[in-house]
Picture 1 (cartoon, helix red, strand yellow):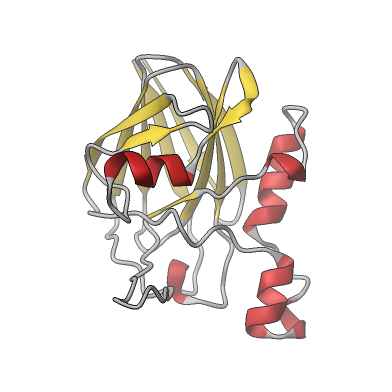
Picture 2 (cartoon, helix red, strand yellow):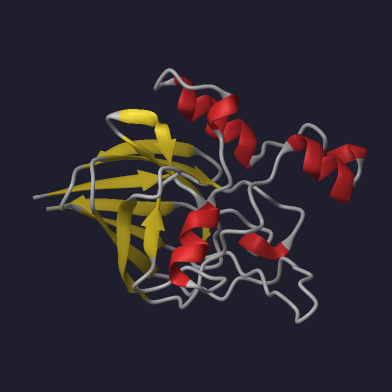
Length: 198
């Protein structure tokens, strides 16, 4: 049995993934950043931890085999397949404020991932205080030897996907990134697909 969710360009989405189920996140058209946060479905106070995840895997990018760790140091999900090769979890999500700083005051009122997260989290009784550093599936963020990061053209092709097996019941919250000022979406946000299967 599987559930298929087509998420329009620039929009948020959330869904329950039960322990043992697999969630497949598909970059349908390619070069689309998919900002994602996971929460323990039984206790939203326990949520994805980028620091614990990076520490557990000992590498800068998420890919096949990565253990997705919680703020309580527990395993939430395991990446079981990845056709893209690497995913960022250091750059965070775009916001109206960061857009203004990076791209000028004319971008202040453009929609951003932080606003998507606020909208979607409100459906589950959470607020902006519950937004934590997220995974940016399919976002290309090269890290130079001196530690500097840049957001570069996406490397994902149409149909590239990542699959994660839930190790506990989790709430998945996605912002299908609306950013048009840097190349993380090829300057053209597109729809994505999420499939949850037993």
